[in-house]
Image 1 (spheres, rainbow, N blue to C red):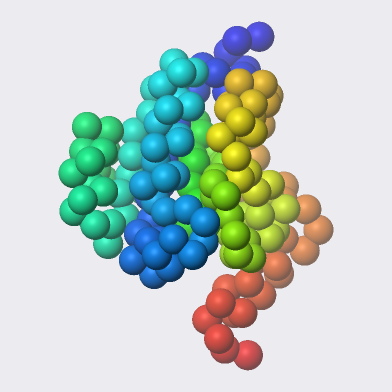
Image 2 (tube, rainbow, N blue to C red):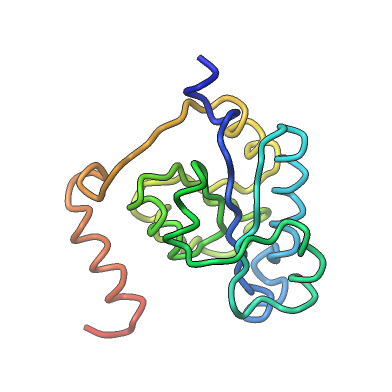
Length: 168
């Protein structure tokens, strides 16, 4: 039924200033990510907004200001069913709030560092065609908490954070 599919849901796009850290060496930038997502979401007819990262460039914020939503992520999540990001820790946060999450990293050329992909919560999407397909055809799946993430999920999350922090 239409009420249970992604086609009727609101999407929140999470921007990250990856180009400031990596240039174009990842194979994509936040601008490419946003362009692709906006194009796919407009065609699908879904409602969407962009939550900018505090360190996003003024150029990116200005270019996409029409779609900007402001506020605390926890508060914003109440208004969205689907959250699309690149490799942000905020995807895990959204998942823990029971949101359907998508990791979209167009044309990724390097190792995937997205925690939700590493934990098996999401699968890496690298093409606009697959993103379109997921949004058009995937049944809406809502996971409500970390206990639904599989065996040793909590331990995997803690180990990932420890590994990223460089502490042993």
